[in-house]
Image (cartoon, rainbow, N blue to C red; front, side):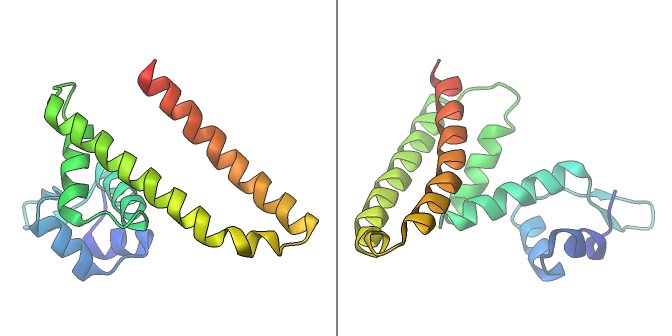
Amino acid sequence: MYRIGEIASLMDISKRTIDYYTQIGLLNPVRTDSNYRMYGEDCIKILEMVEHYKTLNMPLGEIKSSIKMINSNNEIDQAKVEKHCEQIGVLMEHLKEEIKVIEPILQKLSHHEKEMLVNKLSLQGVTLAQTLLLLFD
């Protein structure tokens, strides 16, 4: 269990951000007898997910809904699952547009630079493809 300063330092996030996430219900710390908030490993996992979703430009409200759906103890809300899949589709479309924009820049890379980029993207792409296959199997 971590105090707010410890988890903020560990995750490289400000205490103010941790406070805000707690206020909006993203994080649910345990209160000690002396009223300190203690954050467990579940909070670390949530913070990691929040940071991941933020890199995808997802608003906090949608992040909160996604995390709630993931942690729903196998209760399936079909509408939320469909909305989440729609969000993934929108992100994929956004990525396709980004690729179109960056394509002329990629054409200017040397063979070695292209190879390094492909290797890096291939690993991420394979992981994503495997995840999608598992989800839709």
